[in-house]
Amino acid sequence: MALASSVIWVWALSILLQLALFALLFLKGNFRRLPVLTTYVALNLGQAAYLIVLYSGAGSNLRFLAWSSEAITLVFQALAATEALHLVLKPYPGIWGLGWRALGFISAMLLAFIAKHTAGNYNWALLEADRGYHLLFATAVISCFLLIRYYSIAIPVAYKLLLAGFCFYSCTMILTNTILQSVLYRNFAAYEPVWQFASVFAFALVQAVWLTALWRPLPADDRRHALPSDEIYQRVSPVIDERLRLLNEKLMRLWKKEVRPQ
Amino acid sequence: MSASLVIFSGIAVLLGLLLVWLLRDQGKSRQTDGDLNSADEFHATYFPQVRRAMSQEDLAFLTLRGSARLSRRVRKERQKIALAYLTCLRKDFGRRWRLARVIAVMSPRVGMAQELSRFRLGLAFCLRYELVRFKFVLGRAPLPDLSSLSETVSKLAVRLEKAMNELGERAALATELASTLNGRGVNPR
Image (cartoon, rainbow over all chains, first blue to last red; front, side, top):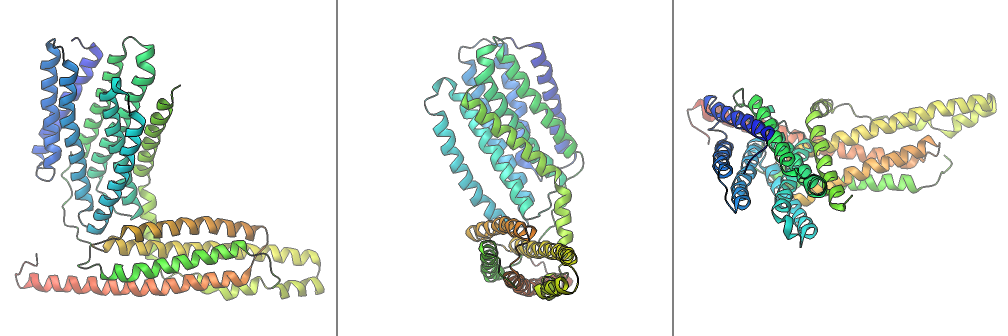
């Protein structure tokens, strides 16, 4: 199967960037702190080699073989993002626990939405599954960013860029998969190179961002903020909530009341 | 244009914009931390002065002895003061709301229902505050209720500051204990 020259060039650039990132992870010693991300980068390099072999031949089930390798890297993408998030939220076990429960709820809701929307569309099953995964993934990362911002937790720049890179790539994949299915497939004969170029280019861009993020050593993990027990939270939180509720009721009364002479 | 294209492209663009906003908004959260540091500045205590400023007796006296025009001018100026007070009241509420989040961040276990409920309360407060503010702009100011509102903010502040002091004492105690253990060459972990 022949690839377009533009796709080959951008793919070569992406492989070069991945090699540089892999080397950087070892040179700066960051592989110790980010073992899953290191495995993810290694898997991507392995997948690139596998696809080169695959595309140089002419197999009948080429598409299935290519996509099955993608499934493994997608699982590791989720694990690598979870690793980065865990490093950010490790000093805040309460928020980490809350984040997990919230993510479980959001993921279940999204899965139901995706299943309902794509039911019966067997022709595009692989692409729909890929888009569904990226939708779930990007929403989960954004939700975590929102949670972190809500609680005013500081994120080291390196972790922020890692997570942002993952999220950007997923957003691009949702967009390109949708455009391919709804516009390109019907209107362009050469739809495949356009899709391949867009997805590989976005991935190469993310690798470049990660290279700059991991150029410096990761910050020392010596933050310990949580108290030994949740006694104060259990005692104070309901009181605060009750007061806030009361305040809201009073505001509501203030809104509903008519003017009274003083 | 298919529904799928609109829905999924819309979601992707929205997620991308949210990502940009979340990455760019670092400065604002830092400013929030600064607000927390000035927690001793508390505006709810100025309510008697605001009530005096909004007194109808003063305005009636001005209309009687001065002119209706002067009375109107004074009324407008005093209304501005009341609006500024209402803004400060919201800042007081916001500061306490954030303090509650600080307590949650420091806790090893956080209740999802409790946090969701507080988030909802904060949103409701913002919405209702805007409605009440609108009422003030229109010159329809129910002062006794404003008094009750500032009293609630004061009580909330007292409870929270007590909790924060307790948190501070415990954190100091934990640090002292850890340094004592380290001094004896004992690893506390």
